[in-house]
Amino acid sequence: MADDGFRTTLGDYFTLQRGTTYKSRLLGLPGPVLLGLATIQRNGGFRTDSLQTYGGDSPTKLLVQPGDLYLSLKNVTQSADLLGAVARLPIDHPPGRLTQDTVKLEPIGSAVPLDYLYWLLRTPQYRSYCRAHATGTTNLGLSREDFLGFSAPEPTPIQSKIVDTLSSLDDKIELNRRMNKTLETMAWSLFKSWFVDFAPVRAKAAGRDTGLPKSIADHFPDRLVDSELGEIPEGWEICRFGAVVEQLRDQENPLSSPNVLYHHFSIPSFDAGQTPKLEYGESIKSIKSRVPAGVVLLSKLNPEIDRVWLVDVEVSARAVCSTEFLVLRARAPFTRSYAYCLARSSAFRQQIEGLVTGTSKSHQRAQVASILDLGVVSAPADIVGAFSATAENLLARTLTCRRESRSLIALRDTLLPKLISGEMRISDAERFIERSDI
Image 1 (cartoon, rainbow, N blue to C red):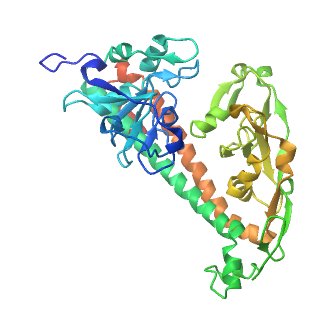
Image 2 (cartoon, rainbow, N blue to C red):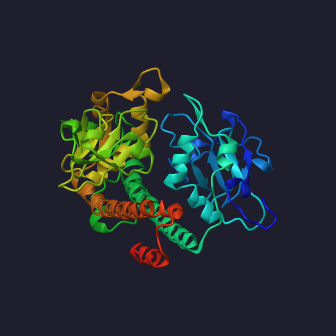
Image 3 (spheres, one colour):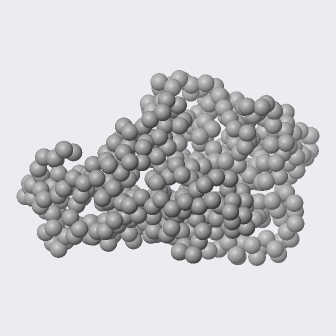
């Protein structure tokens, strides 16, 4: 870097600290979070759904502190979605440890505009640069020299305004994510209390107050009895999962409607934040299952991964999903919220995991008929109704938050290319900021 501080490439801002291998037997033990490829979103961003602590050696040079940037210089697929993809450890997150697949960006000096550089590494122009400079045929790589050689002139006033807007949008998206987590936790906690732990029944059996309104508490019995699934409330039954939900089997070939815009609910879309991809039929190359409004999607692929999707589909929309998903509609008197929480319950997940076939770890499946035949506890209609009166509202609010986040993401993705192109004027940026204030 020149003595006058003029910077033109990423190499003028950063040096790179590469991570090292780790011992898998020490995963889950107390220690820093392990920051491997699974913690980086496709094309950039921090992932929160695949975090594991690591109890092994974590020297200071391998630690990523809150606010630090780290990235991947490799990718295990030809899509190159993770090649050069950057993540920023959240400010309120504990330190993390690099792996052999990730590198930390060490700022040169104290005046490095990290916010600007973070968003620069999220632009489509940078992502295209990474793909163009990829090496290898199976496992793609990006050399340190090519990464550090990417053009990164110091930010202009208009770029600084764009960065402020991008950061504001990101804050709102993160707030929605946290709100959704809270709402889902509230719905799940109520389901677990009533239908897994049977807390109101145990309270009545012990002569304690259930903490529920009398109109609801009176519907719960005051003793547990034995069943094939262990103790359950007296008067409740064991039924098949297929008595709680109906599998919808309608299929469609999107290639037959090449100009129709579909909401495509795929496994990758679920893993990338439960946002369906908008695609024209000509881009969807195989038969898919139709997804009507008001259903739950349950993945039969690798069931040790909790892929249960409370989908948000408008009645008029054309929506399809991977045939790896079961499209499930709740049967009366059960409701979507009840079926969703049941499908995510630990006991049910363990039963599905016991059904897997296939020897490849990445392609284990549970048979559909076996899933629908699993035994589950069936609560009386009045108790299901009381639960759903609360849970339906909580989960509906999560869909509202996701809808808003999709709008925010669309605004962000519209603005990102302009960080490099410089097409916007100050007045345009200010109007964009006003538009994003939703």
